[in-house]
Each structure stands twice: as C-alpha cells, then as structure tokens.
Length: 297
Ligand code: ASP
Image (tube, rainbow, N blue to C red):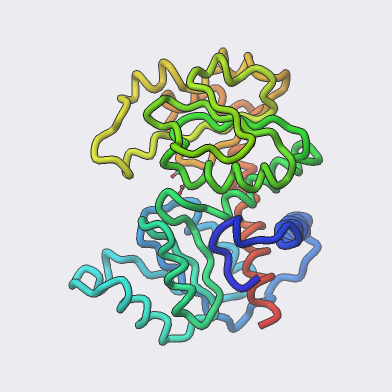
C-alpha cells in the first residue's frame, strides 16, 4: 500500500490488514506513539466535521504532528491554482497528506506529485475509502462477519461517494447489496449484482442493515427533492425499519438530518443505531491506515 485513494486500489489482503490493525487499536493492543516526529498535512478543500477531526485525532494518538490547512485562509483565496498550491505544500515534505476535495480524482493528482502517502478523505462523488473501511469494521464487530448479510443503501446514491465506496467494500466482503433511490438519485450504472428499487417499502424486506444517505444538495444547482417530500417517501422511520429483518441495524455516515432522511427515534435507538460506534471506529481505522502506510517508511 502506497496511498489510500479508493477501495479499488486496495487488495483483499490490504482490506483485511487494515481492519485487523484497526481492531487491534480498538482493543488497546497496539502500541501508540508509533509516529512520533512525523508531520501529517490535513488539506480539506471541502467542509468536514467527522473525517477531518477523526484523522487529526488518529494522527495525534499515534504521536504525529498535524498541520491543518484550509482553502479559505490560504493563497487559493488570492487566485493560486490547485496545482501550484499542491506543489508548494508538497515541497515542504510532509510525511503524509490527508485530503478532501470537491473534484473526483483530485487525490490521484496529488499522489502523482507528492513524495509521501496520500490518503483520500473524500473526493467529489467518487470515493470515501476510510468511511467504507470504518463501516466494514463496525458491521464486522456488530455481526461477526459481513458475508451473507443484506445491506440496503437508501437515498441519494447517484451523488454519494459513501455509497460508492461502501457498495464496493461490502460486495467484496460477500454481502448482498440493494439500493433504494428516488429516480432522480438512481445511479446511471449499477455495480454488478446490486438490486435497485425506488420505493422503501419494496427494498426493506429482509434487510439486515439499512444505510440512509442524505440528498447531497451541495453537489446540485438546486435541491431536486424538497425535504418534506423526501422525508415522506424515503425517510427512514421506525415504521419503515420495521419492514426490514428482525433486529436490523442502522448505519449512517453523517451528517444526519433528523426528520429528513432519518427519524430521530431511529438514529437514537441504542439497539439498532450504530452511528456513534461508526464515529468511534473512524479513529481506529484512520490510526490503522496511518500506521500501515507510515510506520515502516
Ligand atoms: N460525510 C460524508 C461525506 O463526506 C457523507 C455526507 O456528507 O453525506 O461524503
């Protein structure tokens, strides 16, 4: 593993190694302070709460120093191009770059220019590999294994990098994948083997895990569906969750909007919702990724 740009760039062995290493951190079995003296750049060209803070926490738990950069307070605001900004930052020789960008494949361009590992914290509508890894870890912990489970991604699948990377990792781990999407949010190409529905009532029966994906309105000129209409037809309510398999679990990448894509009672149900467990596991997965990419260098 040189970089983490997408699930497609990881072998099955890489995925297992990351999940096992993350589990070791979760169990307190792995040595901290592994990255003392290393400097990690955190370059977020797009808003983030969980991913940015989680990476920073992970790096600091391993003893690394984190340099945070954001475009609003930088020379991007003076008209510097993305390529020149990246060349400038790479010339400072960080030990790793964590980045998020609105453009698909922007991290690939950085990986070609930087002399250090690049970790994708989300690019456009394309990929969010550490989210997929933390989702896989969370489900593996909750159910012992992913193989044979039926997962339903519902909502804005077309614009969601979380759904894209998630479907990829879970298919490779042997899950059955369904999507339920409003026609406006149905992807043009479905990954092989994925079943698609437009009504929640049709996609829910037999689901072991339901993953609501909010409309990614920031990627559209205007919201394609208003919040009330979305909630009425595709919101994950206790009644709709009751159509899934008994004891079905709920995961969500966040941010969640209560009363729109997920009912507050579902999000807060301690027997069903894994949402905060996902957040906790995000730190362990990102520790594992930094560890595996950097410790031996
Ligand atoms: N936080 C996730 C992402 O960055 C999901 C979302 O924003 O809906 O893609």
